[in-house]
Amino acid sequence: MLTAIDKKLMLSTLTDPCRFAALGGIALREYQQAVAYAISASVLGACGHSFVVMFPRQSGKNELQAQLEAFFLMRFIHTGGELVKISPTWKPQSQNAMRRLQRVLNRHPLLQEEWQKDSGYRFSIGKASITFLSGSPEANIVGATASTLLQVDEAQDVSLEKYDKEIAPMAASTNATRVFWGTAWTEDTLLARELRLAQKIEAGDGIRRAFVLTADEVAREVPAYGKFVQKQIAILGRDHPMVRTQFFSELLENGGRLFHDGRLALMQGEHALQTTPQSGQIYAFCLDVAGEDQGLSDAGVMSNPQRDFSALTIVSIHSQLTAWGLHQNHYRIVQRKAWQGIGHSSLFEQLLALARLWNPRQFVVDASGVGAGIASFLQRALPGRVTPFQFTASSKSRLGWDFLGLIDSGRIQDHREATEEQRQFLAQIRACKSSISIGPERLLRWQVPAGTRDEWGREVHDDWLISAALCAVLDSQSIQSGQHTTIISAKDPLQEMDFKFSDKRSRKRI
Image (cartoon, rainbow, N blue to C red; front, side):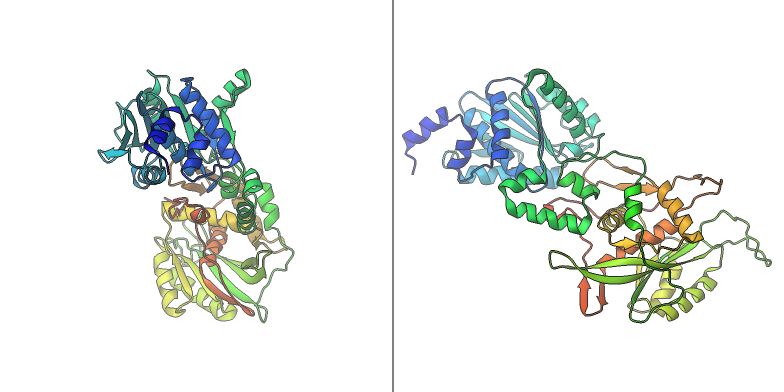
């Protein structure tokens, strides 16, 4: 139990942030300590350095922030000092940051009776204060001043324009230390820009400013973390963007080809094309619906021969046991069917005939726009087996992430025969371009650009690509396969990492 004299003495003399945390019952890990000492040296020495701290998800970044904030409030209790912390959103990110700081203050024997909160976003101890603000584009935050420390949390989600115009000036007149916290995302984010700058200055003066941590380094101190990451790799694949960024701090190129040659190689299977269903196998249908050609003549001549096909991908489903004791479904593309310009009533009849032949356990249908009618008819004809999928900007993004997860983990493969349908599919997947939005939503925009043509001058569509991608929806279904009932929840890859990744699905034709 600290006496009043001990407490007063420590408040004025304690200069070690790690010892401060230990007094509050928190033992910082070695990789956290390195960051804590570097930032505190700059703040207490009024050096005005700029740091970038890029940690994997759930490796202690937020706890370290709260400990440092409480430490600086204590250090400037008598002399005064203003800290400012920016988060991409007010709710929940700024609110969560305040709750974390409040928890540290309430538990720390030196500060639990010293602090107060006012205006709903400002904490103070004596003459020291910290203000929490939102960095969202619409937030009006001009005028705040950071005299000692300016922090930008999840800096990969704060726009460069917002930072340059409204946030950076907060530290300009005081030369306050700046810290950009975050997790790797794309090369065109604020976090990535500041990382490049920090590394350049660091190379010149030798003072460490960039702290880029990977899951391997965390696992050396926290073995359980390493086991968790290995499970995520088994589910998503090491090359999945979420694994690369959230665990291994690898920046992504924003834009360009989404399905590189490595992914195409992972999709190439050794199984045979099937013209009819095989006994004992479980099947599913995935359908991308195109509009019917109203100008189709009696002779069958289409008024728009460039129109998309309605494309059906048939997959067989196989449950496999992972090294972690989990049953995961693997999908093998065994057949493709296509219809161009056909009336929807005729398409429905042919789909129903195929369903009677193949007896699919699940049928995922593009239910957007013109597909809504087909989806409704199929739901009535095949009760309990049809999953309508509505394409929106967010839903297509989520579908894209999930499809990448299937590919990168080797859980979807094409048949070995070279068919015309497969050639078209490969042309579409090679032509697909992508971009990723900056901000908490992390929308993946992926499509075959309009007007794309193959080497023979033929227009490249996206029907086979969308049809195959709908296979990722099957992972959210309960599908009984053989002796096992396999339930694969298509969780957001980052939910288990306490990452607010909203449902992101979007359609090319938006």
